[in-house]
Image (cartoon, rainbow, N blue to C red; front, side, top):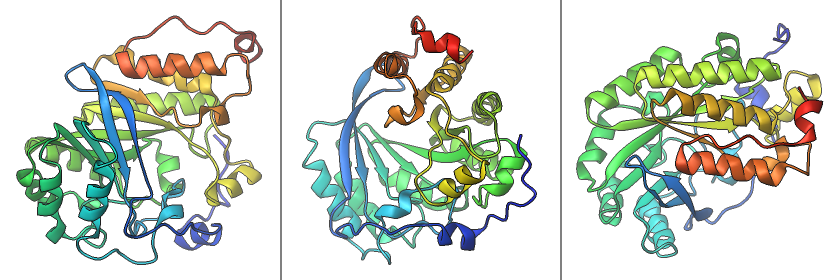
Length: 318
């Protein structure tokens, strides 16, 4: 692990390292798509994702780049239901939906409680709804929203890592105890959870990145989550670029993502996914990239471990 005595990471530093934001239309989600995902029942089905346009999250986490598509202030009451209605018309027939709002769904500074009933009404024909939340917003509002829903609610929480040194510099303003208490509260009230796990955050070597991601998956499942998603850490948000220049961070290798996903699947404790967005960023071998992406996608969808990819780069990086 790298020495980090001179790292002074806080809100001010993270904000000062940023570039310019985009200017999304506050009356429209800034993105939507449909992806295949393995459901908890074991089938592979279409899952819609709506990227809601709203104000920035109040927590300025070190690795976050979601601020790029946020408004300068919270959108008005009724705007979020209108965004959801618009996007759902673009993805007819889906049965599962992820609502991502560049922050926490249960932050009333972003999504007012007055919108919950309208949102629930729009989602009545679905089977599953997944939203994100920081542990500080986990509480009775989650139960209130769940009670309005016809589909099953799942809440995703960013665990990120259980490495104590890395947690200190993430600026996430949460502890492992906050995470476990949130999961326990939701589980007690019949709401399933999934965790986001980071692969090779700052301060870690490649091998350390693998080991701590594996330990974080184990911790998440022991805490009671149903599903884990492993996200390789990238630069591009300003702060991470600064750490890259100073030698405190390097993006992980795609082969490491394969190893961590294999580890999670072998646990057979719950679903484990790898984030496969823009994986070319994590590969230095054009020969096998397409095969590795296909292998990771297969593992995501079928939760099995296919034969490893054969390539000369395996020997060059062993």
